[in-house]
Image (cartoon, rainbow, N blue to C red; front, side):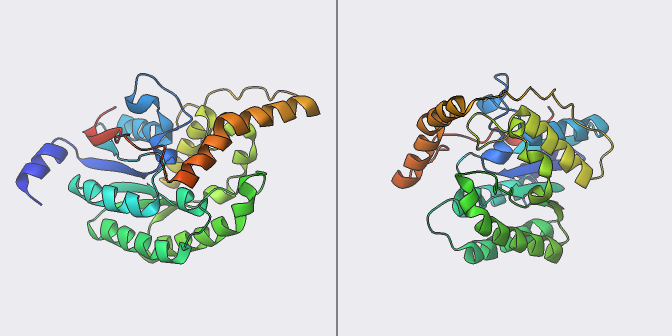
Length: 263
């Protein structure tokens, strides 16, 4: 690696955390107008705690909403390696799993090779299983695919000595207050809760502040049907149309923190 790149990205940082992936890691569902792309997210919350304990830690977030595995690997792995990371989080696959057809085994072979590159460069890697969507009337049909994906990810983690954040087993996320109004991305409460799950896997003593859980409204059958209709019109419908037309919510979106920073 050239001296120019090293000097630009790593000078002054004793350790470096780089977050890779899609909307989950970009932070959608956790709004913060003061931050790039208008979101905060679990990765920012983790970085804040790590930097509180280690002021020399640099943080970058290369995740972009809507990205599928191959594009994440082609766009973000080399960019991450240029930052000489000591810790890398990687979660990708949901946008592939929810397509009509997907070769999970083939994609995870490429995923495995990317993790090998990160580990080979000296980074500790943090991987995630997928969420158990069995309670969702829409995404519950993909539960079998997610389970297959999870077993592959667990195998990759074992193979490379990576940490695993086992999202599938975190039953607190079955509470709808953990989810944004689009029912696809975690809410601020969900992101804060995930940040603490990640910090627990890292065995970090500090914890992120968790916002108070709002009350769940008691809806009548008619009110629930109206709420579902609004959700289909404003969120599910556009999501389906993007997939049918090959468009992505990440078109024109840039990484939030492409270079190492201190929050």
